[in-house]
Image (cartoon, rainbow, N blue to C red; front, side, top):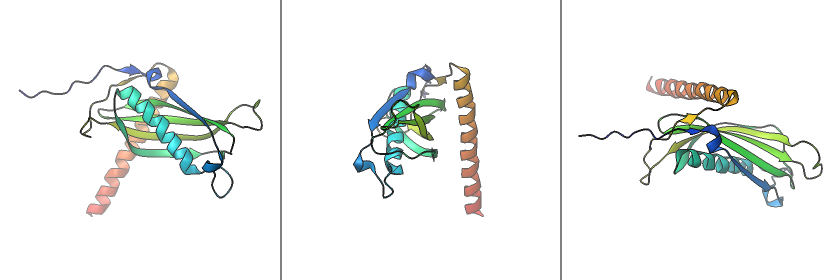
Length: 171
């Protein structure tokens, strides 16, 4: 008799939420005197990976970065917070949304500034590195529902793009 894996019990979006914070230093700077985009990309991947692992209950690896938008520069001394949560889940994959904000070191009383947003796709993997089932994400709020539906749109675009490229290469 063949055993089929069962889908694990779902977890609410709030279960996956993770925040990482750090102060940006001189080692993070690019030639223009602001924080290097690659430093922020690693920070985004770190927080997204933590959210994906928490939600899936085990190892999850980055499959793709759908989008990352840098909206404001980050400077040395800024206290930067990256907030992540799982927006959508499939059988083995999940989309994690990340919002990055900065508290400016020289204007600490001002509101934090959104400096970047990103969407990443992670795949849950077992100890051998093979994809494994991930638990469904349970939406709790209207905002969670909006994020879930927008993640489905991004997924449809990814798949359509992949099919179009494969068709072009086959022709």
